Length: 232
Image (tube, rainbow, N blue to C red):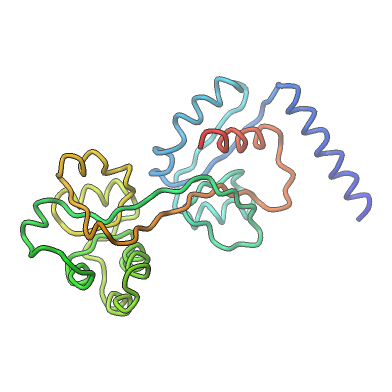
């Protein structure tokens, strides 16, 4: 055990020297959803590559569960996920938080009575990320817990695991959904979409960076993680 500790300390010191020298190189693998890649990675990688042109970056687009498994099994260096699972094998770096807003299109609202309470929301068409309406359950849990059980016997009218696709269905007048506020700011301003029960308690989603716990990360990976932290 003592020898292992010395070797680990030596490896960490070598990585630090290499990082401080400014000559970073190697390949970095990142896994995340297409949505997160579009939202976060293009400008981040653009800036990072200008500073470290010898670091090659490979991006794999996949769901959060596959991303976590890839990191745990050593197939992926960095995962970017929403609400990382409580996995003891992961090192989790909270990255940023996205505020969500509950919305429907103006045409959807026009077809229904004015929405004045949470029960009406449950009884209308819901668009969510999975059929069991996890986002809507979270929102209701913060506002009217009694209705969560009522929602549990209902399935989403449409389920899609990408915010942009959920937004498209909302814009088509197909139901109510929780979406990142930043994604619908223009539509809210133009009143193409309407916030449902605007005085309600909103929800947010945490975006985390995950790596394998107790792994000594190469200098170029450490540098990229630090870069991500600095651009929040």
